[in-house]
Amino acid sequence: MQNFISKLFKRKKEKIKAEAPIHTTPLSDDQLESVSKTAVELAPPQFFVGSGQSVGMQRDHNEDTLFVFSSVLGEGTNDLAFALCIVADGMGGHKNGEVASGVAVRVVAKYLLNRIYTRFLELHHEPMDESIQETLQNGINEAQRAVLRYAPGGGTTFTCALILGEQITVAHIGDSRAYFIYSDGRIQKITKDHSLVQRMIEIGEITEKEAQYHPQKNVLLRALGQNDPVKPDVQTFQFPKGGYLLICSDGLWGQVSDDEIYRLVTTNTDPSMACNALIELANKNGGPDNISVILCTSRGM
Image 1 (tube, one colour):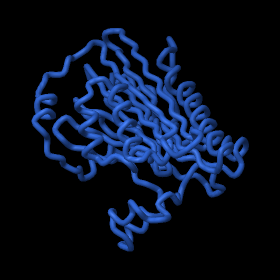
Image 2 (cartoon, rainbow, N blue to C red; image 1 turned 180 degrees about the vertical axis):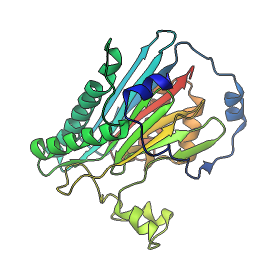
Image 3 (tube, rainbow, N blue to C red; image 1 turned 90 degrees about the vertical axis):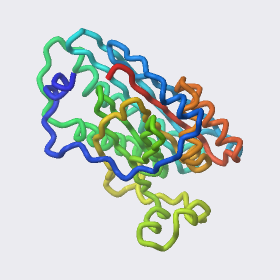
């Protein structure tokens, strides 16, 4: 399948990035038992995706938007497992926030499905003249123009994962996050928050603990809808074998620790139930914001 994919896209000049340092969490007895079980290998390879959303406990409306699309094409030799997962957290008031996130997700989802997914269904296809990373960047540029037009004064975070077989390309702007969760106890944040407090951490003005309670913790330095040219981070990774990809808004990660995220994901074998458990805990911990979460795992890769 990797050869099939590479034929459709311009060869990237950069290699897939090496994994960043990973936070290691000790495994409980229950977790050790769960990861010791042999995963069922399926043919054709496929993704299992769950999602969940809540308005939270302190908001009266929802400004988050999420999108999930998963597909399998099984031909024996050219099998294709495809998934597209997006979380956007709108801002700018009741109207503009929800409009901005909805517009951004719809525009990028349509762009990527038309430019990438439908090409795999064509009987005769010519290679694309751009890489997957360039296609994602171009889709986000389209979304930027649409948000400025349809939600003036509004904005949105945007975290998108395009998954083709074992390859994940992530485009990210704002402070919604993507994580890899491994079966051996590791959880790795693969996106960097484009926030004021993250910048203050980097220059040594505050600590990570102080950032959790900083009065400006919700101030973003980058978002879709800003007048400045949009500059998302776009990276390509290998899907964690036997593990998970998690994408979420700050309504989740701001209320649920990495250790709790790991515990709930690995003790709920169904991705949808795991998402529900994560949302329940975020709401139990106060639920001050909208909560959106997508969880994806693979089998047969």
